[in-house]
Image (tube, rainbow, N blue to C red; front, side):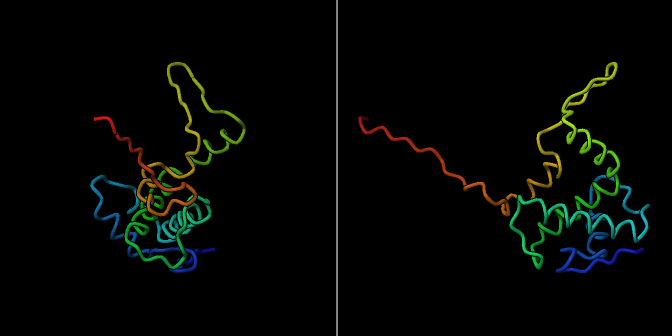
Length: 142
């Protein structure tokens, strides 16, 4: 069954907006080789991962360009790497954090559900982090 992208319900972006974003990326992606339905599935899945992660406070009706860009980035990531991502998530769920095969070694990060470069894009929408409080010191004797 085909997936329909509905802005304000299951997406912050349209397929056309995602296509435009991908056209402007520096590196080549496999986005153009995907069908419209594959792209729509990646767009909706990216929305669900961000919206349901519990990390961000982003309303379904958000229109900020950075939110749209982050969703486009995650959709691209999922379109390209979903099967690998799913396997690593399953390994982490089973308690496997590090492994080595011959000379190849991999160490998992604590919470790689959403890649860190995308989390960084949504930094202004992080919730429950308590804000940033700088440390200030004064020398009253000087």
